[in-house]
Image (cartoon, rainbow, N blue to C red):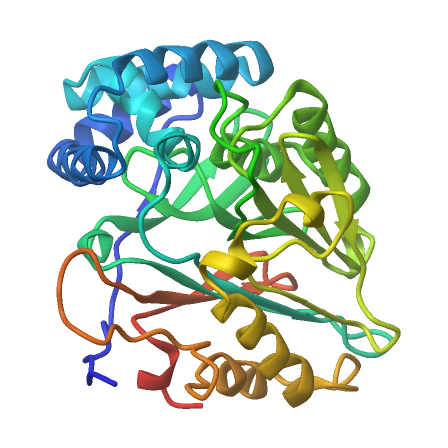
Length: 357
C-alpha cells in the first residue's frame, strides 16, 4: 500500500444566486478554469474508453435532462455560458457515467457505502468512500445551493457536474455507488448524477426521494447506479438503496438491526442476473463481505468513529490505494458522512486511513 498524505482541506462554494440559469453562469464564471480542466480530464478518460467524440452524446444527454429536469438543463447551460464551453461538453460531463458505460468503462468499480440507522431517537450514521481515478483527485468540491423558495441542497460533486453525494435542509441524503449491467451503454438515458441532484433538490422525505428515482427508472437509465437514500428523524428515518439499471429499479432494505451496506454489485433481481461486476471486478464482493462480518448486528449502535474505522479497512480493499502511482489508477478520493441532524456534509479528503478515528 502506498502512503498517501491526507488532504486537510477541500474547496467549498456557496451560490449567491438562486435562479437555475443564473446560478449555473455564476458557477461557471467563478470556477472557469476548474470546469475546463475537469472537462479535459474526462475528455481523456472518454477517449481511453473508446468514445473520443462526445458532442453527440452530450446533445442527447441535454435533451434527456431538459425533458426530465428542465431546471437542471438550464443550470448546465448556465455553467457552459460562464465557463465559456460548448453546452454539449458540459452536458457530457454530467453524463460521464453513461458515456463511460457506452465505451466499455476502463478500470474497476467505485465506492463503499454504509448506513446504520441507530436506536430510537438517534439520527442515522451514513457514510461512504468515494473511489475514483487519481487524475480527478483535485477536481471536486462541496457546493451549497440555495433555491428561490428557501430550500438548500448541499452536495459533493465534480466541477461542472450538477450533483452526486449530498444532503438537503429537510434531512434527506443521498449516497452514490456505480454498478455495471450488461445492458448499460445502449443509447442515452437520464444521467444518474442529474437524478441524484434532483432528488436532493426536491425530496422532503425518503418516500419523495424514491418516487423521484423511480420516475427516472421509468423514463430510462443507461448507466447503472445505486442511490442510497437516507432520511433524518424528521424525514422518515430509514435508508433504502435504489438500484437503477436499464430495466428499471430495485430496492434494498436495511437488515433487521438497521444496517444497510452497498458496494458495486447488484443486490436485487432481476438486475443481478445481468451484473458484470462480480466477474470483471470481484473486489466488490470482498468489500461487501468484509463489512458485513465486521458490522454484523451493529445497525442500532454504530458510532461515526467506528464507521470511519470500517471504511479505513485495508484487508478487503475498502480503503483503496493503487498498487502503482499514476493518473489512471483508482484510489479513495474522499470519505463523506451525511450529518442528517445538522443537514450538512462532513467531508474527509483523501483515504480514510489518513484521518484520526
